Length: 270
Image (tube, rainbow, N blue to C red; front, side):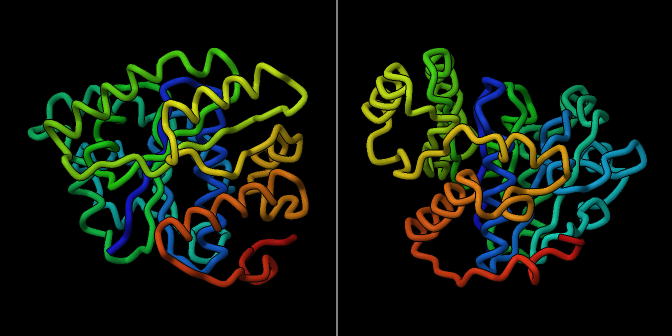
């Protein structure tokens, strides 16, 4: 049965979607069957793996409205082993639609339960807010990964996020745990960055991954080409960092895998 991992931080611009997309891709590269759930109405995870996000696609919004089953919404990507439940701007309407639903916090959980057995891992890219979509993700998930940018303002809002997780654990999902914390966009030239990183490690302890994601122009360029960093530039420092992160993730989960050549992994043109 697939493990569900949500990538969450209500502060935007911290590398949340980049981390979710690239972790999902590298998990697929290590032979895992992965479902990427784009729960952000901006649809950046959808475009980040080269999937069309026009108005005629089915999203979680259509599932909330009972207009299609989840199997009709899930699409294959050009990455072997990686499927996606895509998103587009219509998904913003699901916050209102969910209010009308009975057990509205559990709609995503019930949705994913019907396909969970088909995947090794399900990764959820949460919206940068703590609304009903995020609560649905937290109710459905087994664990959460928190990407945190190595800047002072990134520390703001963490208390609110942890309070939300605590309330969900108390009332909706007693099994939820913190999988880990990923330090992103690190610039080693800044002393402040190192001070912030130290503060985060004091707060989260061993939950903080040893792997740190650096600032890297190739990571910033890849989504505009609809490609994960493994496919766009597998030799960049960003690609190497995300590969190391997934190796660390698999070790923590006592899981193993052998890296697939990207020419086999990618079904498009390199």
